[in-house]
Image 1 (tube, rainbow, N blue to C red):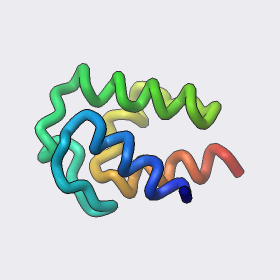
Image 2: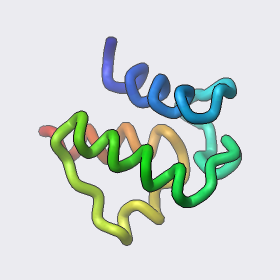
Image 3: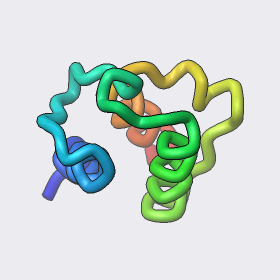
Image 4: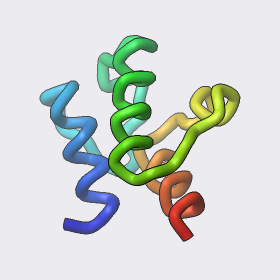
Length: 73
């Protein structure tokens, strides 16, 4: 499974909704704690770290994918 699909799958675990790369994270029904938990899980899984300011700038699922890709290169 590629990174994009893995990140989408992580969002689906929490939201049980249709998730695409263009999905707005907040529109998925996640509260701020859900978002932080999800990002922390992704940090552990990919060995990356998101700064607090960076977490607030992640608007779409694609933003999360791109951030992980940049940090793992």
